[in-house]
Structures are given as C-alpha cells and as structure tokens.
Amino acid sequence: MVRVRGRGNGRVNIAGAVCFRPGSRPHLFYRLHVYHGRKGEPKTFAWHEYRDLIITAHQQLKAPLVWCWDNLNVHLAKELAAFAEEHQDWLRIFQMPSYAPELNPAEGVWSLLKRAIANFVATDLGGLVRIVKRKLKKIQFRPHLIDGCLTGTGLIIEPW
Image: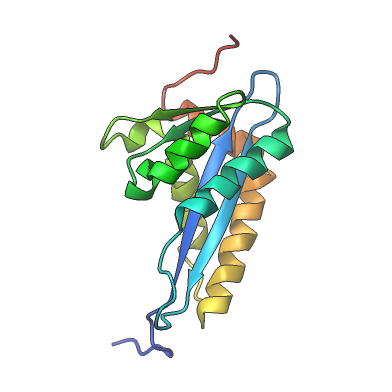
C-alpha cells in the first residue's frame, strides 16, 4: 500500500497544437487548464480558450493556418465554427476522422510528455503543473522531437 497526501480531486488539462511549415522549424503551442476541484469551477477548456490558442498560433507564426481538429465535443461548438467562418481569410479548419489519433501529430507530443513525467512524483497540484510546464518547454525547444511526431503519422507537408 502506498499512502499519498492530498484529496486527489484536482487535475491538469492540456490543449495543444503542433504547427509545421516547409523549410521552417515546427512549433508547439499549448495551454493548461488547472481544475482544483472547487464547486462551480469549470473542469475543462471552454470554446473561447481554444479560440485563443488559434489566435496565439496565428499571431506568433504570422501566417495563415490550416487547423485540424479531432472530434472532441467542444471542437464542434457552433461558436468555434462561427469564429472560423469569420476568419476564413487566414483560417481553415478540417475535421479529422473519428477515432484516428494515429493521424494527429499532437498525440505524439502527449506520448512524449507522458514518458517524460512517468518517474516524477508531484506532492500537490502546483507541483504537477510545474513538472508539466517544464517538460512541455523541453519538447518545444527540441524541434526534431516535434518533427518525429509528424513522421509518426505518415503524413507529409507539401507547399501549395
């Protein structure tokens, strides 16, 4: 038996995107949503937090985006569809097939993250957040790892 401290009802959710452009290094953008288990506190990301992630990627890259969603229910929100429609001059959204994580390079990043934190112990939610941020930052600054996540999907990026 292993005894641990704490209530255990907090969690960390991560939303992220990997961005590729021929001739440039890949980029990883992410946001964390920390749920402390408090009454009335949102447990997951809202549609506007995904919108903000898209805007951040667009502003940082200074380029049009082709955004590929998995089938998470919030990705299908009418507000996000309206946002995409409003910004179709720089944003195209494609829906990935259901149950196709093997086509999503971000899944490779989550796999790298899980392996990186496998031997770490967090004493509290704040400690977990620090570990996750540190490991994601390491992945961000190792473009060959992010490139490997695209290679793992079998997809290729071709200029238009």
